[in-house]
Amino acid sequence: MRRGGGIGIFIVLIVLALAEYYTFSALRFSMRGLRPGLKTGLTIAYIVFTLLWIGSFLLFPAMRNGEMNKTLRNILISFTMGILITKVLIAAVLLIDDVRRVFFLMGSWFYDRNNLPQTVQQGMSRSEFLNNLALIFGGSVFAALIYGMTNRYNYNLKKVKLAFSSLPDAFHGYKVVQISDIHSGSLNNPEAILKGIQTINDLKPDIIFFTGDLVNNRSDEMQPFMQVFNKLQAKHGVFSILGNHDYGDYVSWNSPQEKEKNLLTLKQIHADLGWRLLLDEHVVLEQNGHKIGVLGVQNTSFRNNFHSYGDLKKAYEGSEALPFKILLSHDPSHWDGEVNSKYKDIHLTLSGHTHGMQFGIDIPWLKWSPVQYMYKQWAGLYSKDDQHIYVNRGFGFLGYPGRVGILPEITFFELHKS
Image: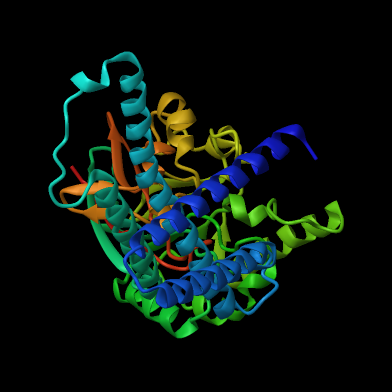
């Protein structure tokens, strides 16, 4: 085992141990006034519940590799992640109380205790308040995660109007639909997905762009959904790219040849769906004698924990004379990493990848998610000078089978000549 990996596992174990200690302590504190028999019964129930949670936690490798029924996997993932997050949040709140106590004790060592301000206890103590706050906070988050499972097919149509002086007149009013991050290995409801596909077709788009992550890991994850996604229709067709999950980098293969075969099969799936997969290349769209360019690159990331396969220089070559260009690039870190500094005439970049972390706040006056501390551009539209990037929140889901605050997205763009 690598030394870094061993340290990482040790840190995870410490966090889990602290989370369990604080959660159990909070439970015991809240039960202190109960009858002994009831207290014992609740304690036993909690221990059994925790053992079941540990068991589901140990099943995570099987969940990740898709070796179980999808519905069961989704339930277990929600249960496991929900309890884990709840315990960690409870521990975080109670840790604040322990830190407060430490500073109070340190102060008592340096000052005369008789001269310390005396606190008159009225109502509940600080510790009792924080204990109750921790349980309520943790329980509320757990309830939100359970509720979020009902939102995983609740597609949110985002309409965006963009104006460009360089857009040819013939493309004024051009209608573009973007979807991203289908993650077919997580999906289990073709009927619900069909409603999303119908929503797209009802928009009568001129073109549809898919910006990567068709599968979680393996090409065969798409087989149950071929007759769903092949129904996408647009005047100029569907154009697609690969995302980081499409390369099979997150599972173990019997040989490099098996991994390569998986990728070749996935590329053929794009063709079988009727989608034009762009692999570091561009196509020219023509309308009434006017032309624009669509560039598509393989996954290109400027974060060290993701592989990069793309070559924007190769995709760009030959498109220099086109007055307007759209780039499909899965990872939004590519925009600051290369696009807006070296390719000033790429007017619009369409990305995905972040999912908005499937958790956050997404209302007109407030947009927040933990993923924003990892990605500067993480959901919606961002601009710099005359260039724009739009980060789609994802059509599917990965890991946690739900959406809390950040709904699955279908984006409808209208391009206008300014």
